[in-house]
Every structure is written in structure tokens, then in C-alpha cells.
Image 1 (cartoon, rainbow, N blue to C red):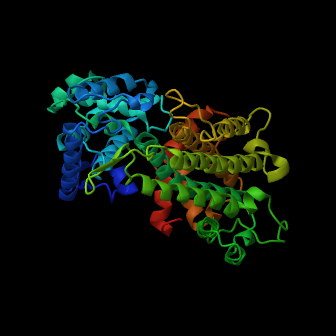
Image 2: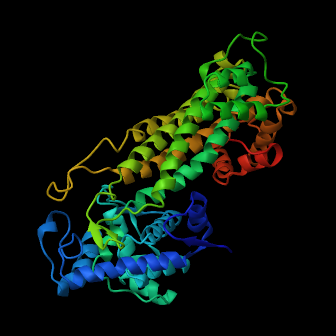
Length: 508
């Protein structure tokens, strides 16, 4: 198993996924160790000289004008963690917790936070030995960082709170004991350094953005299969059309559709059956492509954020200076994750409209609701209801969290990002969209069965076969949710995309 070395500068999204989901171990680079030590030395100097520096020798938020004595600094840091542990709701899943931990460790490794090396190593050891703090999903405003959820992470470091260890929920102290990790006593600056950052929103949003890349590919696959089921026109995907409006996502989507349908005998050319298709067939490159470009924008922002120093104050060891700024403010990620949710919601919007075209005999020329014995059987009638319900829910969830702000800390923190809400919503939208696409794949495969599956294109034939490996053609009404769940498992495991890419090459 490889090790991911962290230095605060070079972590990639792929590294993050490997640590979060592959449980790859993490290690500090030698350069990072030296930067952390230098930063800590500056903090110790501030404390010894009793220099007034926010969060080191003062209280927090509105209490920043309250000076704390050298003797009270440890008590101050502990109080910070226990008082800020106000998260509510169900816990984040394990992969998000691991992503939070490695992102926080990577930010501290930059050497601008002033923590002791042993404190940072404790967090890394917890990650490597799989002591996973229970971190509630709700309670962050996304400015002054993800204070509440990150405090729950730190509770376990000091022997408080709760954690999962070897699939068992334990008190934090017991989990650390069983893993053989000594708990720590926080000292000056450390509590603030551990919780004052954007790592919760970034972790949750980054995992969703990573999954969104594959979901855009699956959206193209589902659209291509529907295109063939409805004898769609391929002229709209001609590269000449897209070169004169050269958005990258649009161009890539058009290429994907043509590659997926290459060799198909079910597609048509303009004028053969009809002159043009409806928008959710003809404009797939423009619709899906815009979402692809939006997701790439989000990933660009993530790549910056995962290697950023986001706490406060920042310690500049070369200058022996501490500056109280605002890098903890989540606005750059809040806007990005709202955009991510909107982009994913649009994939579901277009998919649901294609489902309607498949099940509506006035639009498809196929048997109503894709069943030969309509009336006795409802066929795919209610699957479209379910898809419509998910799409409607997405429209509510896609309302941006970042346009809201409620002042906090006696109006000292008078604008907050709500970025963690944006990230959590994007994940829910991703889930809903994946289920809409599962229904489209099922319906498109059923529609193709009324024609000839052997006449499908190179890529769509593989998608059809993967669907039929787990769900047979609907001859008589049966329990449909089990079929939807089987296709959803293929989507969650990226089975269809990987099978197609293995045969025709990487989709974009």
C-alpha cells in the first residue's frame, strides 16, 4: 500500500480519495516537519513575551479584546474545544471524516498554524490507525471555519467525545487507548489552529465533486442509449457544430455521444424520420457540457483549497509575525459547492425529460409506458413519477446556501458563508441524480428491447448488457424499486462507465 506524503503544498484530489476511501496511510515530509517546528517556536515566543495576539493570548470572536495570561492558555484551548462542540444531526460517513482529517493535517503541515509537531502527529496517527471521530453533519456556518464539526474531531484527540474504532462506537479516550495513541493536552494556539478552517465543507464537497465526474459520463451514456431507443438524429453532435461554440464540456460531450453510438443502426440522420429532435436529445452537449464545465470549475477551486492555510491568525515564522485575517471564510467554496449542486441538478432535469419521452407513446412511438399489455400492467408509468419527485426535490436543494448569512458572535462575525450546507446539499443532489439516471437506463434498455439490442452502438451495447445482467426485460409488472436499486449499485460502483471505458477508451 502506498503512502501519501503531505507537505501542505502538493496534495491532489486523487490523493484525497485514496486516503478517504482507500485508507492509504499518511506521512509528513521532512520539509513539513521543519516548517511546523519553526512556526511553533514563534508561538512559544509570543506566549513567553506575553504579546497580545488573537487566539494565542486573547479570547475568541467577540472576546478577542480579553487578554489571557500565560498560565491560562491551556485552559483556554480546552474550553474552546468543549464549548464549540455543538454539532447536531447524524454523523458524517467515514470517507468524509477521513477526508476532513487529512485535509486538516495537510493545512497544518504548511507551517502557518503554530501547532506542536506532536499534536499534528496525533491527528495523523489517528488517521493511520483508523480512529474515526464521530462528527455531526450540522452546525457549521462556514466562516470562522467549520468550528463546530472540527471541534468534534479534536474532542477525541484530547480523550473526549466519541469515535469509531474497529466498527465499534467508543468513548474518545477508550478508542485512543485501544489504538495505542496517547491523548494530548492542547496548549497555546492549538485548539484554534485545529478548528479554524474550511476542511469540513471542502472534504464533503470534494468527494461529491469527484463522484460527479463519473456521473457526467454516465449521463452521456444514458442519453446515448435513449437517443438510440428513440431513433435520434446524430447530426446535432457533428464536431463542426461544436467547434463554432467551443466550450470544452460541450465539445467533449458531443464526442462522447458519437463514440458511444458508433456503429449504431438505430440512430438516424436529419430528414430520415424527422428534421430535428427535442432539446433533451438534440442539446445534450450544450446541457451536459455546461455541467461538465461547472464541475471542472469546482475541482479547480478544490485543488487550491486543499493546499491552503485557512486558520487564524496565520504565523509567518520568517518574519516572526502573526496576522489576523480571514482565510477561514468559506465563501470561495460556498459559491463553488452551490454551483456543483446546480450542475448536478441539471443532469437530473434533462434525464427526467428523456424518461418522459420514452414512456409517453405520443412522443416515442413505442407502447405506452413501455409495456405491451397496458391497462393490466402499468409498466414504467410510476418510475417517471419517482424521477419527477427526485428532480423536484433537487430544485429545492439547488437553492444556493451561499446567498444566506446570519451574523454571529455578537455581530463580530457579521457575514458567514454557509458553505458546509452547500457541500452537504450537493451530495444529496448527487444521490438523487444518480437514481434518476438509474431509471433512465432501465427505461432506455426496455425501449431498445422493442427494437433490436444487437443494433446498438459500440458503447451503448455495453451499457445495455450491464443493465440486463442485473435487471431483465419487464414482461409483466413487478416490484420496481428492487430493479432501480440494482442499477443504482452499478452506478455507485462505477461499473457501467468502467466497462465502457475499458472497451472504447476514456470518456471526457
